[in-house]
Structures are given as C-alpha cells and as structure tokens.
Image (cartoon, rainbow, N blue to C red; front, side, top):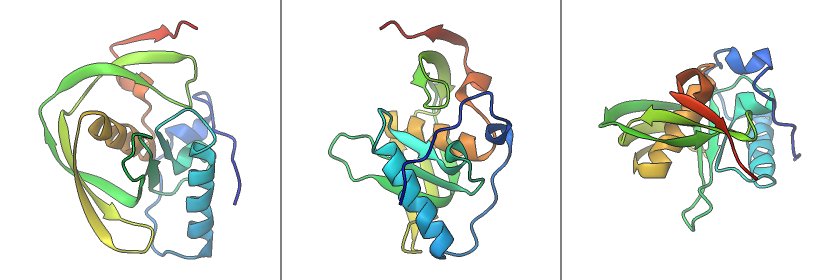
Length: 154
C-alpha cells in the first residue's frame, strides 16, 4: 500500500493505548501492508501500528536473519521468564540507544494476518522485539524503561 512516516518520540500518539482489532477487514489489511512496506524500507527489526499513526493492536517483526517475519494482531505476552539487560533502540527515537531490562524468554499469543490464533515462544532478540513492540501498543517507549540512554556514534 504505502510507506508511512514513522512518528517520533515527541508525538503524543505514541503515549496512547491502542485499540483491540475486532475484525480483519479491508482497512486492517491495508494497515498490515503499510506496516510491512514501512519496515521493509528502514533499518529496523520491528514496527507497531501506533508508530505509523494508527492506534490498533498490530505489530510486525522482521529480524532480517532468514527467519520468517511475524505479523501479530492483538498480541499478548502470556509468560515472561528470566531477565537480561541489553542495548535497545527504536525507529521512533533515532540516533540513540538505551540499556533496558527485558525478559530472557517470552510466550506470546495473538492472531496472524489470516485470522488464525498463533503462539510463539521466543528468546533473545525476538523476545526483546516482542516486548518492545507490545509496549508500543500500551503507549510505552523503551526510553520510559531505559536505565541509561546514549547517542549512537556514527
């Protein structure tokens, strides 16, 4: 559909809680295409619908490591296991990274783009990406959780 502008951290939309998606209609399918097109056009691994201005509970993750990309509608984290501290960045806060504590492993449930309920057990980078993107759906940015934030050196 279209490559959308990614909202920056100052935009109040990013601090709002997203609405549950009740049906997989044409509008939702267009939003899914916009998420994919936008993420495929930038150097990032995840994008949530609020980051392109749509307060719907949809995330798209593409680790760009050969694993199939993941699109989830109404995702929820049903289990968090362990904790680890690591660097994290965000397309809505470009040029910076922060140190954030996230679960080591998560189990996430949601609906895929054809309406089927799916479950993922994730660890490492994928677990962090799920947590980061789901936080966006709740109006939380990684900078709200970061222990330290620093400018990325060119």
